[in-house]
Length: 239
Length: 338
Image (cartoon, rainbow over all chains, first blue to last red; front, top):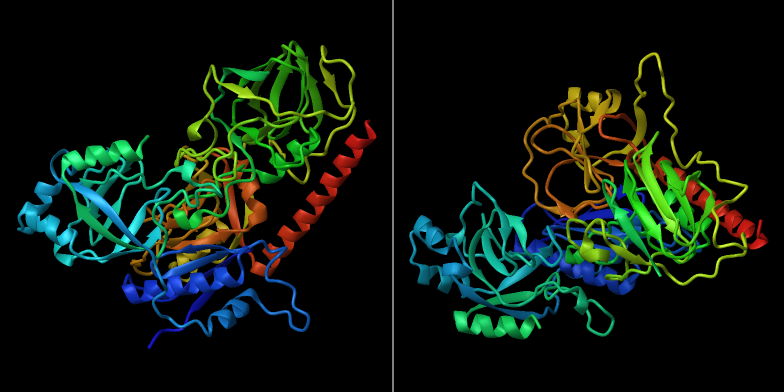
């Protein structure tokens, strides 16, 4: 059973839909299913999916489209459009992220392993064993918030955030794991680094598609690689 | 032919209407803080394609123009002079080839827009020439102007207002800055500016404020803090609190969203708002009042009055209609060549 969608008029040009109040796979799947359905129906909407909510931004002069017979409120129009959307898994892309774990690539890995009472190898095995879901992007362009972290691996953020976290750093912050797409300040614990470029405006053209390697709703796995492979892939992707 | 930056000013960035369409990827819109002023500056120099203009804060840049160009200054009017000639705001002026435009401080307001005929020919990033300082996106790799920067000027054949390229000209007409800019009435006896009253829509968690905080939110003045910037304005003066702490999960936020972090000091998100946030939201500034807040300085007082979505939408639509009418009138005036 799924809860009703709460619809809040947030601003003159924005509606916020809430699908629940927790961070979980089922709720987030409903967000992405709704986003897909609404975008198909109204390509002109700008949609911002989050863990359990979806923002719709529209041009109030253009949307909702004028209807002949009724002057419905935007919230009612959206509720009606979503009434038939089954909260089921939508087809998603699978993305593999190569990660060089530990040492200079993940400065906090050894400390994190010690804190939770696992060996470094076990942490790597558990982090790369499961499939994650890109619940949402935010904080910085291309920064994915991932669902699916093994709860054993969760550890609160550092008390002293770093001024500069290297681009590509794979990190754990509380019950979440994510990837820093650019050099940024951050308090998450660094466990590894990917050589891939998560966000590149040069990719963001009609010819090349999205500037972001990851899209909301994507499925994702981490694949451990060695430093030599990191250097090779880094050179290939940073030409 | 280009413009050479001799002095950068306090914070000078290239801005246009912003970068919509990428929020789901974590990319905010950015764009001009005072959009009507930006749009009117462009209109005055005949630009109709959302060209990038310079937005500068409190103290403007000094620019050397290698060729003659028509300019307009809107928003807060800075002290402006070219080779000894003082230039007014809210009109069209010609800077001659080789002219050095010195832009100083502003008597009122916080942000000015300098549009040039043809716009600045800078790279468009994800469909926009606006600078996103936090994400480091946009022209100049998303940074503010620096001394020594060179900005190319766009191709443009201006309507023939003036035949000579080697003198300063000022159009014989100008726009009334009202209602696009609030001239704060100075009260010499108090040296104090009365609080600017801003319309506030309810937010998701307005009802979670304790009764005293809710009352103060809508009746007491707040002061814009010193660290106000393009991302957010923190408001000092009144500590607000909730009935009980709320555990929230991140969701989308907008420019104008008023958040209440644990410090108890509300924060109004501005043009360069992040796309998501996790603090309680105690209000949403009416969109028509965002540029008005953007024109207030650190230390200025503001207060809030409650409004409904219908009122805010009607005000926004009325402002848009008025702006569209003015843009059309400017275009007619320029076509007429006088």
